[in-house]
Amino acid sequence: MASMQKRLQKELLALQNDPPPGMTLNEKSVQNSITQWIVDMEGAPGTLYEGEKFQLLFKFSSRYPFDSPQVMFTGENIPVHPHVYSNGHICLSILTEDWSPALSVQSVCLSIISMLSSCKEKRRPPDNSFYVRTCNKNPKKTKWWYHAFHCLVLVFPGYSSAVHTPRSISSSKTRLPVLC
View 1 (tube, one colour):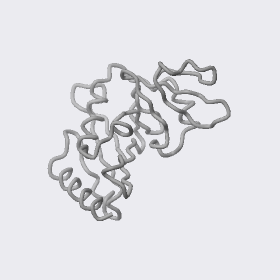
View 2 (cartoon, one colour):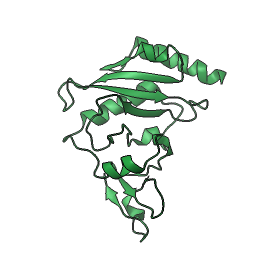
View 3 (cartoon, rainbow, N blue to C red):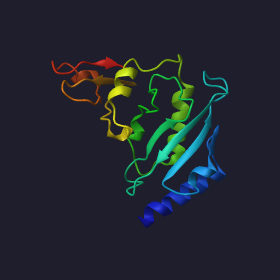
View 4 (cartoon, rainbow, N blue to C red):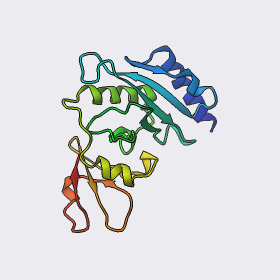
């Protein structure tokens, strides 16, 4: 636990002293616990999200940095984006299978800024309604599988949660793919 707290203190200072462009640590969010942060975010100039304000919620387990943080959009304004669900869950590989202890809160923030900045059209994932109705509240409990910048949600009959998987294995009769 001590190494996790030491790492979080280091990252907290880095985020306070040298935040990524458009990002600010919400100081109130870390007053009671170092394991849950809110980062205020402003859409990058020249993008579809210019001037919009968002909040990212970071939750860290005792296994951080070996386990990725839980990261999701929170608050009243969730960005409309093909990889962001209306409940704030984010389909981004570095938040799950591509996580590495070499990554940091700053690198996650930069990846999310980049993801939003490269968006060409504001729209929700096509499976947004289904996913939001059936998913776990913790986005890390979703089995996200990635395929060339797209995710597929698979419906397993009899189950109440979504699994995201690449198109290449979606041919089973028990699975119904939906591109997002």
